[in-house]
Each structure stands twice: as C-alpha cells, then as structure tokens.
Length: 503
Image 1 (cartoon, rainbow, N blue to C red):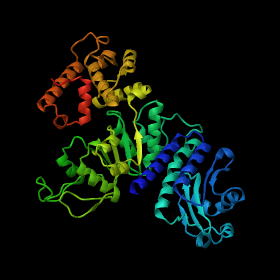
Image 2 (image 1 turned 180 degrees about the horizontal axis):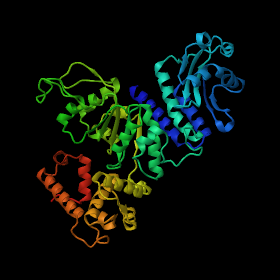
Image 3 (image 1 turned 30 degrees about the vertical axis):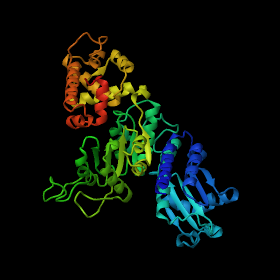
Image 4 (image 1 turned 120 degrees about the vertical axis):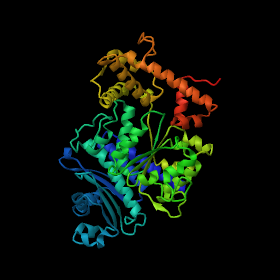
C-alpha cells in the first residue's frame, strides 16, 4: 500500500514537470486539468486564466460543470471567492462557503449553496488566474480542509504558474515562447545561468528542473558519469525556496562504509572510538533548512540506506550512539550513474528507498546526445579557466572547434572541461592567445608534431599511477577508489579511457 502511494505521488510530480513541455496555453490548461482531476477527487474543478490578448477575458477549462453552471461559477462567484484569491494572492479554503462569515453577503454563494471550496491563485508576483475546486452540498469526495490536499493543489498552482506566465508573455518575457534552453524568471535565471547549451535535449532538462525546483520535492538525477549532475543539483538549490540555506554535498562512493553513517548523521559522545566527550555534526544537520545532495546514491551502504529511508519518511534521524530522535528540515537531491532497478533486483538497493527518492526523476543526457552543446560549453569552460587562473583573454581557433566537434567524449562534460583547462594552460605556456587543436589533443599526430607536451606527460603519469595503484590492490576497484579519493565508477571510466588491462 505504501509503495502504491509513493508511485501515485511520483506520477503526480512527474506530470507537473511535464507541463513545461506544452507550447500553447490551450493545450497546457487541458493537460493541467487532467493532472488535477486525476489527483484530487473534487466534484467540480476549474482553471481560469486571464489572457490580455483576449481583452482581459479569461481562458477557462472545467471538469464536472458546464453551460450555465460553469457561467455561474466563473462569472458570479468570481466576484467573491475567486476575486479574493486573485486580489490577496492567498489561498481561500472553506468547508462550507454558504455559512462562512466572509461570504454571507454574496448572493451567488448563497444561491448556489456552495459547500466545500478551495481556491488557489496562479502566478508569482502578478496573479493571473486561479485553480478552483468545489464540492456541492452533500458531496463527500472532496474535503478542502484537508491540509494534505491544500498543499498539493498549491504545489500544482505554483508549478502551473511558470509555463502560463511564459506562454502569456508575463514577467517581461516575450509573448512567443523563447527557445527551450533559454532561462526564464529572475531567480531561476540566476540559478541556471551556468547551464550552457543549445540542444533540445538539455533544454528539456533545464525546463523541467526550473519547474520542479520550487516544489520542494526530492529529485533523482540519473545519467552517465561526468554529465554535470552536481552542477544541476546546485542550480536546483539556488532556484528553490531553500536558496538562503546551505547546499551540502556528499559522495557516497568515496567514504568507507564504516564511516558513512557518521558522515551523514553525526555521532553523540561515545558513539564510536573517534568521538570524545563532544559530538560530531553530520551532513544532514549541516544541511538544515537547505539541500542535501547525495552523489553516487547507488553506492550507499545497506545500513545507511535504512537510516536514509527513515529520514525521508519521518524527517527524523538518530546520531550514532544517540537515543533521541532529531528533526531534520532538508530537501534531498540524489544522483547516480548506476541502474538502480538492477541493483534492486540484485538486493543491493532498497526498493522502498528507491520510490522515496524517485518522486521525480530527471535523466541527464550524455554529450553524445547533445552535440550542439559542445562548442558553447567549450567557450564557457575557457572563460572560466581564464578567470580562475587570471590568464590573458583567449579564444578557440577554428581548428580547435572542428577538433572538438569531431572528437568522442566518453567522459562527457567533466572530460571536456578538463581538456579545455589543460589546453588553455598549454596555449599560455607557448605564448598563444588562441587555443589550437594540438593544445586540446596533443597526443593526436594530426593535430601536433610535438611529442612531449604538458597534457601528454600528465596523461602518462595518470595512466602509470592508476595502473600502479590497481596492481598494488590486486585490482580491487573499491580499494583503488579509496586510495585515489574518487568514485568506483570513475575508476572504471579511467580503466576504459587508458585501456588498462590486468596482466
């Protein structure tokens, strides 16, 4: 039963994220009404949006009411309940509108004997419409005084406001929908500025994250290693209502199992031998009021999985050695490049934890599926390198751009960023103001005749060092990852990249 509830909740939030895909107000409102009706069992439901292009007339979609009944709700009742919601920007909720002192003077409310009503405004600064739910006298399906239903409808209205304001040209946006990868809204502009790209695939990811960020639900980022999941997690935090709180990151794969619970939840005095008379503050406590980013969640040890599940279910946790539950106000964003469903089948990952984390899953595509982003990303990384190392201004030569576009990038964004940084430094060492193809690919005989370069020497050192560590640990990837302070998945990527083989 609990898993079914989690699945329904996941489907609801996934449907909210998909509202960003619509490119017209009419199709958006129709889809939104379907999501609302499927989630909340109101006898009558209506979404009303004021459209300036229609001389201020509202666009209305409704369920359970039509004709004169719909006209009565949208025209007459709007002077009272709907009008108050739009004017004040606050949710109007009542178990019996006909007996509510606020609406005794409204003849339409009394004439229709409105009973259970929930009305939520749509819009951030300028309220452009409402979500209106109503149960007629004797209806039992809908109880607006239920706090859980009110919270979900408010989340729904908040999620709907972004696409509506974009399509109606509100908040300074153009009336026509901008390209999908552009940024919309001041707060989310700031958060997603670092997410560069022109591809439709990455644009869809950014649009969904922009919509999901304010909802304060747990998010699972999936995709190959190196695609930028950490950058996206930080953007989610900055675009959320928790932006003033801390963003705390922990890589579950780089911390030994024996220390992981201590790192996550902290320890009371005597919790383990390393704790003296004081206490150890864990990452959960450090993220209070903010966002906890759990990278490589698929590597989480079984014991820590159970405690994380408790945290997500009850918002409480115990320090190691502690007997008093501690409250936690954190949002969890998790990331993995592993197949969690396969891990569940192999009993390496808890199914109930997966569904708790899987409320909203965002798949981040590899660079091979968004080749249009290669050049914009390269210029952005070059700008960052020049700024970070205080180098003279540099640009990418035409040959460098062609080489970047022609190359394969199995290490994705991380590999591209590292190559650009190394190339910029190499260009500076030879006194060039342009990064050339041979700066990026010094080992490629087509791009350079030089055999000894900074990058080739670095690659040889990395290859020999990694091979030496693997040999010392008898090719134990886990031990090698701990020694090198990287994730196991990164060790596997390096083995493939350097074509390492065991004797």
